[in-house]
Length: 96
Image: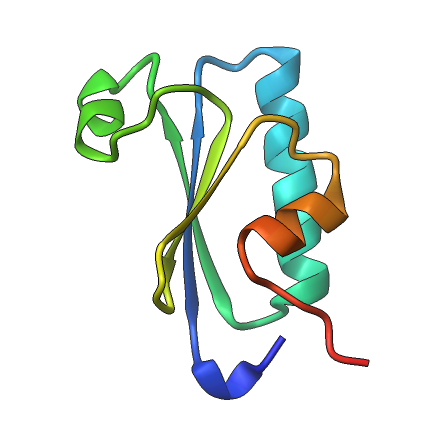
């Protein structure tokens, strides 16, 4: 990751506190801590409790992880345990 790009703003949309939602939260936080350490803001939104946010964010499935900043906007839908797919899908790379 290029920390010169600044702060990452991420939103994780879940649907209720199911085991799948809890795993998505845990895995997303782990990825953020490892690859964006100190350079991210993660908001977790339960679209079951607040369905208006699903409409506003154009969320069609949960879990969905959205990278709002820095541009461009990126979305990853589905299994949040596949770290490499998330990194590629959200254009996050660990520098070697």
